[in-house]
Length: 130
Image (cartoon, rainbow, N blue to C red; front, side):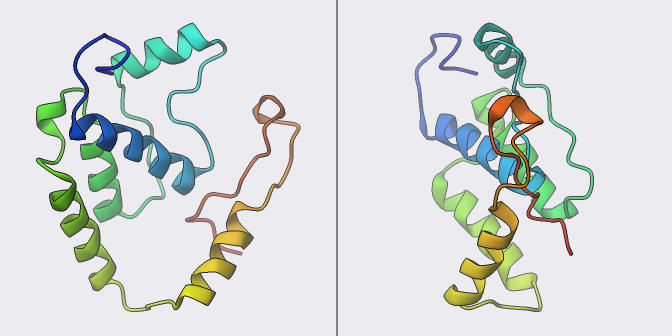
């Protein structure tokens, strides 16, 4: 939101972008996508939180914090964000190896359909199971 409003960019600006990417990875859709670039920028400027139903509460809390409208309400640093993400990773009972993670990501991010989503391939949300 600060870049669209012409305010200075900080590490917290990067966290907002990271939060947008996480929403897209977790849900398969862009959180602020509008019908036009102007509508998309308005949605980003307003920074209304996207729906995160079906996302685990601990992950949702991190995403929500990254997408806070005010930079001061986001993580104080990238290190703080990394620590929060690491705590979640350590709390999960299953640890995947790099090969397993690659297979899992490929399966979930493979294009499903180009008919919806304005010509862009639709991807499966990372939380979707088969």
